[in-house]
Length: 188
Image (cartoon, rainbow, N blue to C red):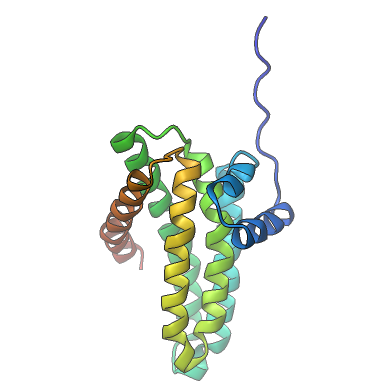
């Protein structure tokens, strides 16, 4: 007797918002585990593109207050946010799988990371429009991204060894900066 085929992920953005709140308010690998198979690449991509649109609109609206170009701010975020997300998620998956034999899938990594990345990136953009608080908020958001990323690596790649998860995250960050600079240099 054959096993039934696993059902395709079907969660929508409306379902992802409370999932994001859950991982942000109850941070642990087990919280991420609850949701990692609820969606896939398509859901993660839609969620991240929506974050890019929201961040682009916020940055565009407030660009004149900072003597910046409205369209430049909007389109740079619309392109940069999804590209940066994709590079980082790919690095986490490839490094976790090939260096530490992680057993997660690209869809699990993308979906898991989208759950914290989207709200934190929007909050970072909102707070970033305030001149003095912008750099402080950027630092706090960066620390939060690292913290939630560490938990998400453990969950999505099934790396319970904290050193392996930390090394995966650090090497992914390095790969992100190198590949991201090249790719964004080409696109922008």
